[in-house]
Image (cartoon, rainbow, N blue to C red; front, side, top):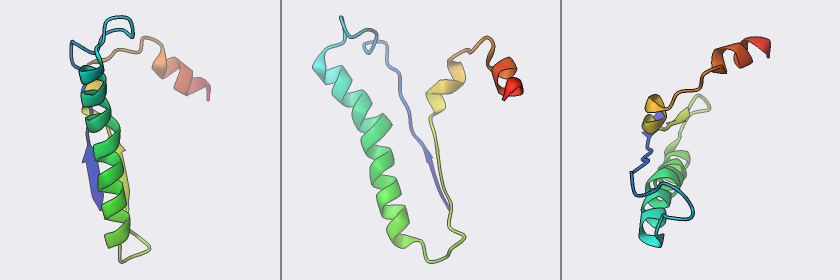
Length: 75
């Protein structure tokens, strides 16, 4: 099993109008590139049909979604 828990949401990555390119690149490197590289390596090393790759983003734990439970219930 491969478990990726990658995700950042730094204060300087606020709005497209105020975020500079360095902050944008840092977020992309952690949130996308690192997960891509881990999955790429993990897929190559899976020796079993039962191999699992799980991706999560830990910064999401601090974001509130007011009616998410209701939306999921309606599905």
